[in-house]
Length: 514
Image (tube, rainbow, N blue to C red):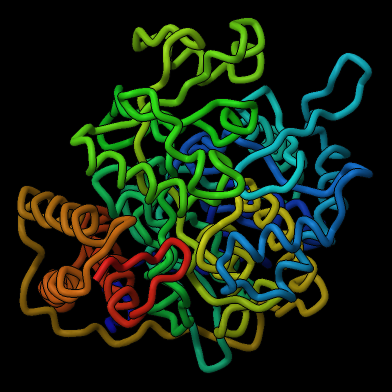
């Protein structure tokens, strides 16, 4: 594994230092920053703007036990069941039992969850949940509302500085662990020092041709952590959301039709009108995502159709428009007259259950380096994520990272980082057109062979091809964000394919047909 992407003669080092550096401007990164002791200076590094991450796009809501009819035990059991026996039970218990506390805290910070006419918070149901426990904001705009609110609070804190449109290049380490990061703002690489670093960069959706994830999810955080020596886990477990809108695809970005739509009574049907989930699972259309995804794909293969349909006709127009305003506007803009018309949907890449391995305090295997949000593997999600647990995980483990940093704060003294000796790079990178071709080829491999249904021989072929591309760039001189990105994508894709090859049995989202 190549240790650093940057080269010495291209890095500006002016001793810029913060007590804590958080890479990622989504829910995990923002809530972590807000829980850092105000006496510590914090830098938030965001690859894009506040609206460019996966948190902003989260529609469904956040799962937490807030009702007397619900219980911690029920939420824990639902999570373990969806995770197909692969969850870390202690991590699940932490997630569920601390859920109500973080919900009350974000309300205190200004997040306004949707309420009924009597002023009670509305709770809904999604796939895999035994009861209604999903809170939401703005109907189907939960992620956007929460991210915007927490972002506004963070921007008003004197100890927090935010750097938008800034790319993580590398994590710096010495013999005692993490000591800083190298970032690029589009013009140059520069060093920011800190002995307390939190990686909350999101996931890997853009390694696939089609995904619900935003453009920036190219595995940069995972690749940087691996180069720094952090261990990754469960990388083969990639979740495919069963109901992405089958029309109106924009540059590979799929519009998500929230699971909450089925929670309100929508029914999946094939072209003949058959409700095909009826006898496939006791929860029918609200079965765990991996099960629904595979049943949809089986129906599509059987009928030769490129989608199935979500029947929302049992909802009246006023209710649908108010409960799902974003989905309503999107469908109407494409000529789908919901709720009268059914919504064409099919599965697409959505979420990575694996990632950088962490403990119950979000610590990685590298001292001073933390990870939270989708980039991390806390053990909560197991082999298949339960709907709306991801937003809760961002908050619970983002806060846990902050509290651990506050208690075990590592001072920025006692070291002087010396740039590593430059490696000898024989070749510069190929032209942009060739890089684009390599990225497109990697995406096609991942989409074709590392999808929701997999074959052993195809996985092995994909691993060899991805490893070949990785090796192509391993000894090249990398000098800009595009070149860094293709290398990170090759690293992350190769690790996913390699992990899938090693996992011989089908568990949760990892499903091998041969």
